[in-house]
Length: 422
Image (cartoon, rainbow, N blue to C red; front, side, top):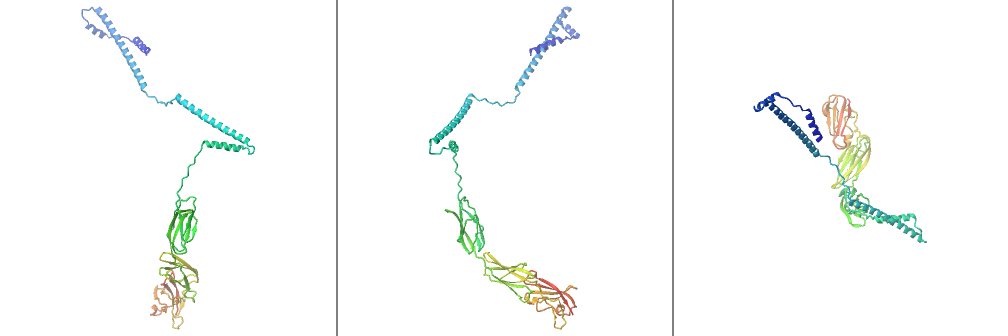
């Protein structure tokens, strides 16, 4: 720092040149006392002025040096304030800590050495015992290995923890607490009985060892069903099952018009108790309710008749039978001649009076769409006149329609053509 200051002073003195201002000197001379000789006064004041100027220069240089020094000091102060990133210092281990670690290592080594010496000593003892027993078979290498392993196992003994004991719980549910005779009841086992045999007792003298059995009762009544753990009389679960009676339907079928193969009309019957209900169903979609029923099969082929009887407990039973028949035909003629000769004087399908069931027949004139005759009496056929009382209608083809009014068949409408001849 002193070299820089000296250099600055030297450089300032070398480059300094005193400026000359004539006006300033003249003004200075006017202020001097008048008694002073001009020559002497001029020389003295010049020297004094030069001295003042040089002092000002020196003061300026000193002030410059002082400012530079302050800047440098402030710069150093700023540098000391700047925070440097901290580094993580690892504390060296103390002498006491190192001594502890060395002692632990030495102790571990000594323990391993003692263990190895003990194993070697056991091996030597075993070999001596084998050599000193003349009547015994000398221990083989595998036997020695087993002894050594046993010795090692003695050093560290693991005490097994007792397994958790699951409590024995016997429980089950049934698909229904009430059932009908012959109906299967499913029993679902919900027990917690690991490794324990369970026995089912259905209360009717039968048992089972299945996990989830099913059972049907053959006699109506109340039964106590139980599930028990074998050999544990106090571990049992039971429930009551009520079995209601079921109907025992018996049916009979008979062809009503045995002489008419083209009229497959059958009559069914059964005997039921007061609290029972009988329902008949056929394979062609018809349904009848009651102890008796009549059905007409329109199509040829094999048909099924099924009887279902249900009692007040909701229990039901069914029986069925098979019937083979020809295609149904109302046996309607194709033409008639109402001319008064007594032969083929009126028209009506021959099956209607034979079946003895309610019906309605109508005759229509296809040319005009007019209904010319209508009847529900099998004994009142069409005689060819308008409403059977007016004049005779013109000859030609007419359309007939028969609607059966009883539930003997699902499709109750039949129709055909009849020719009215003179």
